[in-house]
Length: 254
Ligand code: PEP
Image 1 (cartoon, rainbow, N blue to C red):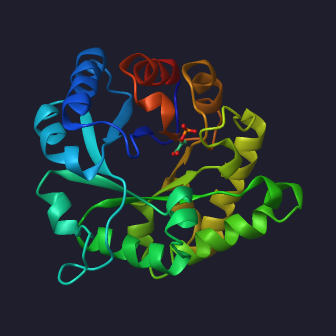
Image 2: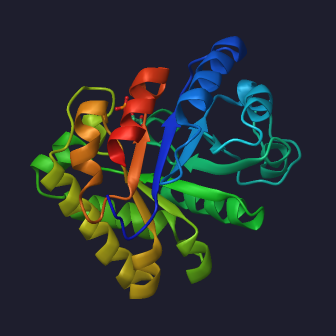
């Protein structure tokens, strides 16, 4: 299908895959996806597998992403990982503000904005996640929540930096639950996100930003979701852990 923006489909492996398991997965993906040019393909392994996965995808059409990054450039921050460390492994994308980190690590919009600035300072591209809970959707505050997350998490970015930023819309109630937003629900929120970006930055920036959908994306629903005008890719969790399902999501989206 012809899209206004090139599709970006990323697999978020979360806290899954040893190095050996990660290599199995990525070697399979490399074999299956070697001919795909229409989609930007990204895998986001845990930090411990970045080094080996990076070597395994050299000279392929698969790019590397990380699942988090410190807003600091280095120093006494036990357990943290800085941009320069990710760049050693040719990481290009960094997922920021995933709902699991917002929930379990209490990451705030301000912290996510600081991390986003740090990724850009290192020429890495952030994938900033936003999304509402079921209670927020049902009580009618969804746009207020997502609008606030967008404004807070992109604060301080220049227009050029925003154009190079990816937004992932991930309704919290659809992550890992098997419940997917309907294509219309996804399109409506993606259009709202683009309007909000036009307001926060400008129309030209909003037109260029890629907005991924995430939340129980599977081979069976990928085509319909990706056919929506404002859906520019997917951030995939569970279905990115198997060669067959991640490959089929990508092939079904073309
Ligand atoms: C995610 O956590 O980014 C995600 C979308 O997970 P899943 O595809 O398993 O719902």
